[in-house]
Image (cartoon, rainbow, N blue to C red; front, side, top):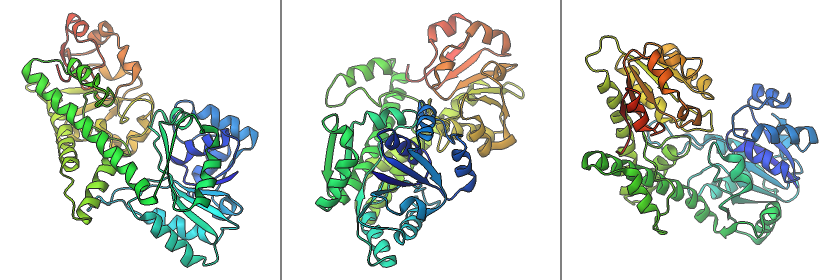
Length: 432
């Protein structure tokens, strides 16, 4: 099949590479000329484990191409996938739909023959109806259907998740559109759950799923706080909870709060849609408020360890919102760093993949280390904010010789607490 994909970000690019690997003819469209120029020369524009190899393989095979021309990507396509951003509005926090609306309006005039237009971006309920209206207004003779095709790719695991999905959800209001999507995902037939529902149900599933997972993360963080005061161990508690099949073990890892490009944005959008429909989504709002407060509390924990020290130096490991990605959007690590900056802290930070993206956010307000040992020189406290596996292998004896004061605040529980204390560190983790 010929597939046009509008947007080459953390959703569009892995999806395009994945569909090309399945044998489709994929054209990725992006307005940003510099990004397209890089992609055309074989330079990948984001980090995802395993993506670069597949990208190069399919580029060489000619199954995936890149353009700034909407006409080139949409003409004669069987499926056009919209994968542009829906960032939160700065005031209301609702999903900002300007990129979706612009893409739908622009693609309309280039539709030829029957085409399925699929929204893979996370969009408010009813967006499919709006897209239908925009396309029909611009091109009354267009033969098309709009489907909802929500993405469930975890950043850091996008390639794995594309080829091993838990489920494929399709919101299609016509049998004709359903057949096209069934053909597109035929390689997954019998290997995963394919759920065909009404378009508005599909649009809701994505938001409802992410909001539930965000609530689960906030819940275990609150239990971690309880464990710290009561003498329980949050990992033992989480293990016991997770053995209940109704609860399950996933998303029960305590930490500095949820972040990234999805959970903060989608919880805010879901809460906004609730208000618009006269529904009080109180659990979602509690998770939003509690998660924001947690970042401030985590920054305070770090500052508390250097109280009384003149001009303290804070070493930070981790700036990405989680391991396996270079994405710093809504990163708990960056929000905590921001709180520390506001308190006038002297910070030196390191991240193996996200350092350049972090510099775009905080610039010269902090210092940057060459590696995880470079940041430790003369530091009074080490704060671990992202769960990179490299950090787990930190040589504590070497670290001890570099630091001025032997303090560790491990907000990801990466290090062995007993070993850290044996090495002479004052160690503080989460939930114990």
